[in-house]
Image 1: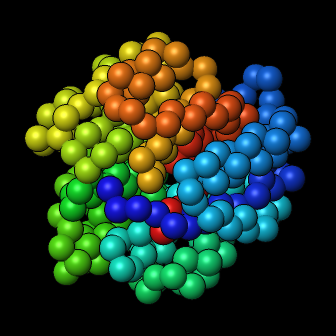
Image 2 (image 1 turned 30 degrees about the vertical axis):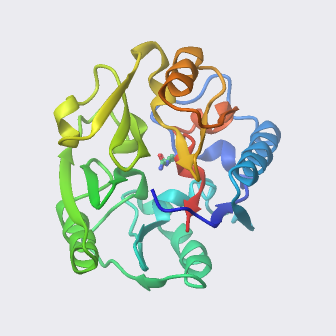
Length: 257
Ligand code: CIR
């Protein structure tokens, strides 16, 4: 994986308790606690050697801390998305403007929809979940931006019960992917090595790997052990349990450049 220098993040909105979630969280989201957890996440990004930008929250956009969905980095460019959830589309401009300081930003028009959480890059291959949020036109637009830059785009049909592709998997290296057991077939990722996370810790299959280190859910001891056995990298536990109540995980909270 190429080294990343900068992480774009966005503060937690005071309306975060109204964020989208498949099931109403019980207990409800605690916004104060979510903000503390976000601060710890930003500090953990610093431990990975990333200079972290924290954009102001937009209280009109309860989900705005989940910046990953708004922009996909594609080599020397980035694709500003059109999120599948209409209530999230107003999040895109602020993220795109921050990314535009570092990358040429390409755009996506209706009827295309795509969420960054559906895009998983392994080496030069983007695996893209065709989900309730990402449609064929969105995948085709990513392909238009990615192909001339040397990337391949492979669509992955998603079961309706899974929000995004990266809800159940994430890249650990250019040819290694972490996958929650019992979700997608191992063959989804071609020849990549697949490390299986036990289904009891399925949420921990979403890790953030960068610059030789990896952030992992704080409450997933088996996954931590798996990562520690896999390589000598620093494994940093991070608690984002309030974001999980809104179906968000570790990668969702940043865009790495
Ligand atoms: C949503 O439903 O869109 C947000 N509540 C959660 C988005 C999480 N983002 C991600 O997995 N990339």
